[in-house]
Amino acid sequence: MEELIIIGGGVAGMTASIYASRYQIKHLLFGEVPGGQGTLAGTVENYPGYLAIPGPELMQKLIEQAKKYGVEIKQEKVGALAKIDGGFEVKTEKAPYQTKTLILAMGASFRSLNIPGEDKFIGKGVSYCTNCDIPLFKEKIVAIVGGGDSAVTSALHAAEFAQKVFIIHRRKEYRAEPAWVEKMRQTGKIEEVLANEVKEIKGTEKVVSLVLKNPYQNKQELAVDGVFIEIGQVPISSLVKPLGVALNDSGYIKVSPEMATNVPGVFAAGDIAAIQGGLLFRQFITAAADGARAAASVYQCFHQGAIPAPSWGQKS
Image 1 (cartoon, helix red, strand yellow):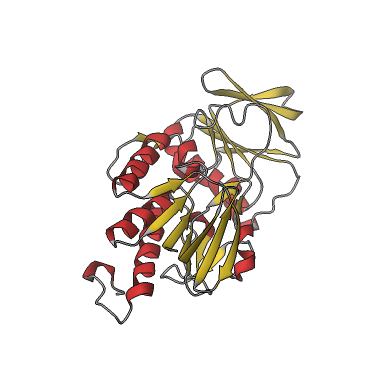
Image 2 (cartoon, one colour):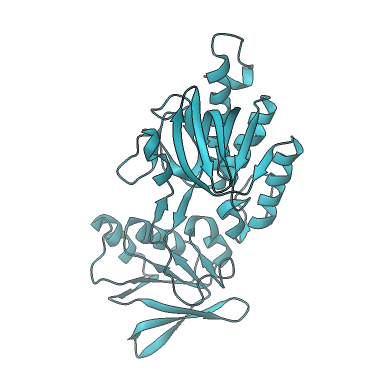
């Protein structure tokens, strides 16, 4: 039986592995695609230590760092989790694995438009994170797709950098808070394209235009340099239900500041985790911090009261 199994090969999972190795916790890491959604990021400019680095390159560095400590990364899809005597069972399409503790770092998947050109231009003008990538579009023309708080606040943020911002929403009314909508309308830089949808994203080496369902100002295409799809995320949390792990109303795993769930021995980190009372801020840097805290908490779980925790791993 392993001491720990980490499920998720993104920033949170890889960082948890690095710290678990440094704590000398015997563990496995499961990730169908090592690097996770970080490999879809374009240029990352907000991760400490790098002025700018492509997402895939940053993830490769994390993978190499985790492997340096000898962790075995299994590219197997986890199909089920179950409680067993003394721990948990992780079932994949290849085999069952037993572990004393779990760190859940499966992340959250972005809701996509599922339209032609979307996948082709990810990182080349298509982004699911305005906060991450809008600085790359200074004085450019961009579009935000969506009508909730995420989309409207993203449009506000985009207006601080872009020359012009379109917000495209399939309904006539926004789902966002009226106060945000009013603030958006006061900027003078955000043009609303309501009761309309994006049907295709066009480009050559990068995005150049969006094809709309309905003509806008007598044109079927909207010329843009980038499009930010802000229609929400879906936490990949269906696996945890048999364990009895508590979820919030949006399906994210509830965790304490120590990244502990309500089930002893089960921890969560990264985009899938919602720290009770904390700010939901889904970035590489917060995912890394979550992973480090989760690994430290696993260490505490094993050694609390038996040996002193390292000074850099104690609670404040």
